[in-house]
Amino acid sequence: MKLHGFAISNYYNMVKMVLLEKGMAFEEVLTTPSQESSYLTKSPMGKVPCLETEQGYLTETAVIMEYLEDLGEGPSLFPDDAFQRARVREIIHYLEIYIELPARELYGDAFFSRPADEELKARVRKKLERGLQALEQITPDSAYFSAEQLSYADVFYYFTMTVFARMAKISLNWDAYNEVPKLRERIERLAQRESVQKIHADQKAGA
Image (tube, rainbow, N blue to C red; front, side, top):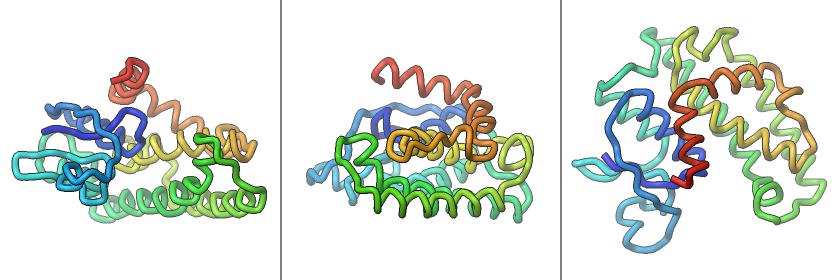
């Protein structure tokens, strides 16, 4: 398999972490989002990541993860219990819709020198506070989101919340690591995993 994308993409790194955690063989292909016709034949919306398989190309992070899980290689990142599997998917949905999506409204301000007005900042912070409150309500009090077992929810959490925390500090003067319950603890635990350390080492090396 070939994973198309680039090292600073949080969604690319989610898929990369899953591949590493499962011990699956893959090749990385440096690719940036593109509307070029040659890339649109692989990723119809021109986004990354894109997974190249013997049968064709797959896009959208959650879909790729489900595919990797269905291959049955390496440890499962879903719990055995049906309700707990649903909970993992629920947490992922909350992270995508109620944290990542509103946070993205301020990425231009935080990372790309496109200032946002105070009204937008206030509106985004309100959305994020509500999303964080809801996320905490459905989050179990355990080492990982699925008891002691790493799950896809943890993968999404790490790469969503680290970007959120950077944006919050820059754009909102919001020290999320100290103000959002358990954020620092969860991020520090996940950062100790070999897969995450490998991803960060590759980022520093420009891989």
